[in-house]
Amino acid sequence: MTDNLLIDRLAQEVLHWCVAPDRFLTGNRSWIPKWKFNPLERLEDAFRLLDHSQPMRYAISQIGGAFQVEVERSGKVGKASGDSKPRAITLALARSLGLEL
Image (cartoon, rainbow, N blue to C red):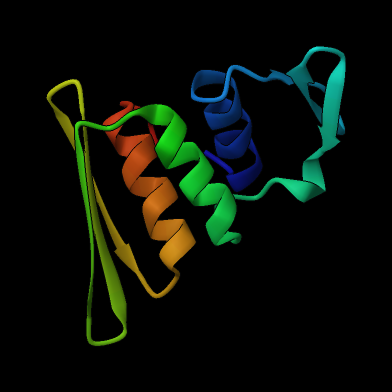
């Protein structure tokens, strides 16, 4: 799955946004351009997804230079690690949702 497709799927499933070719329709006749929402690169967007997903539990740690993230939702645990904190959070969340990466 490409990064753009993953972001689209997460926006739909977690934030309940509609996906258009160059924007996300956020509801109440509002929208944002796709380039303004990138949870794989922007920490605030990654936490926005995490908060809206209402996880039962999550843990973020740093060992050396790598971030370790674990997210539990509805009994399913997603794990990810890497040098990028937003990417690790987003991938762990996607795995806890059962998205194929």
